[in-house]
Length: 370
Image (cartoon, rainbow, N blue to C red; front, side, top):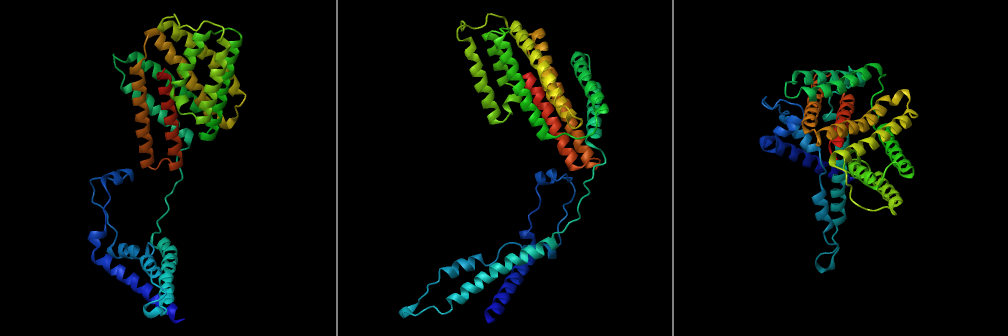
């Protein structure tokens, strides 16, 4: 019993000493937030920093952490015997007290810290649903395109305006179910499997030759959609494509004699067939809750066709349109940030919206790179 009293007294002295030490040297112990941290916390950088009270800060510093670990380590190094082979009578008492202080500090921190750091829970109820917020985001993106349309980019702006008008019309009609990332990944896998099955059929029917097949596979492997797929999906695709290439083993393995433009046209023709089959396949998976995900996947394949078509016409990649589209997506990110600051959307809706923008960006860059 006496050892328990000593243990509690020593633990109390440790807390008092630490509290006085931190209270006196408060300015030295307190570490102000960096500019980067304040930006991440959406706090104004130029405003004066709000410091916690000296008493509360000292109390938190006293309670948090484990006390007595160094004492415990030192106590464990004490010998069991001293001079003349006499036993160290108080060694076990020291070990008990050191271990007791450690246990007390652990229990105290678990009980006191939640009480001292209790904060008011933020209201995370979104005023706008995912569909409403995404519809507003796309409408703002369309207005941004119109404000930045000039004589030098009128054709590019008209293409983007048409795409945004179709998306806005769709989001006005679809029911609000949010975007399910797991369902999106499942549909992407189905789409990729359908793509491989389509190529298999084109090979067996003799509709494409070795050069066309190799060009299309090279194009797909260099897109960001493929690069961001899972390792097993990529490995499966590459393995199956290499296996299908054996169908051409009896053909002459020569480089394509077609021009750049004709090669692009051939890839575009295959991409159209693939897109058509994917739309047909995913329509069988469509239910009320996954319309957004299905449109997102099919649009990524449609974007390939549109980009290939423009590349065939210009015999190059329309970089200006891609940069303009990326600029619009960055504007949409800023708009989502403003909605969050105004507490019009919850953090959950904001995350889903940012995920949809990231996927749009990935699909855009995927159609751009070939």
